[in-house]
Image (cartoon, rainbow, N blue to C red; front, side, top):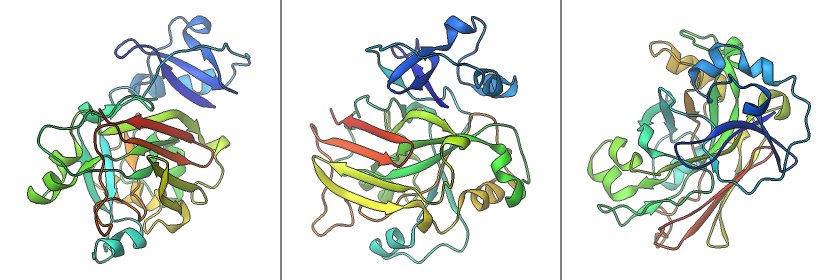
Length: 276
């Protein structure tokens, strides 16, 4: 399934994407909640799997495919080629940081150019969405806790990120986490560690790699985080970006007002955002 949220900001409804047509789940299930922890906890993922409708062609905005996750967690330096381009050593364990919930953004919404940074960068990332609560999850059980996958652009204010000596503020500006276009369930993805991911900025390919090059794969990331941090339904974990970000190019290439960034991952689709 490709689970979406559609409608104006703050008024999104849950739906399914079927060959570019939208199935409005609220018409089938009037009591269905939004795609929050309640959705996963109350078995709606299984209930909507029974839906067999064609859908409608609707010209509507898509919102991020999950609402109000308790955590947006990210993994830094998780591709060897990305660590190398920044002159970093490979981490010995997953490097975990977070983005604030206000950064969450729709897959085609604008990215707001910040007031306190002029070094705004892109990072295509495979994002894992957690489907049930878990702590101290064994790697071999990790996929049981995954609801599905989506794409995140971990937009980053590099000057703020580096000057603060920690990453939270420079990663958490409003609109800095475009997510989507859909939450794609595991059955439609297959081997999540064999997906090509790519970033195109203003028509030029900037990142082109595959998830098989992750230093720490999804089960290991889930094991590591869940040792002492309980993962909740709807949590988002962005697994890291490959090489090709703008700040480490010579000379650096960074986003400006009017830039268009498209991030794509095999089987998950693409997200496309304009900087304004």
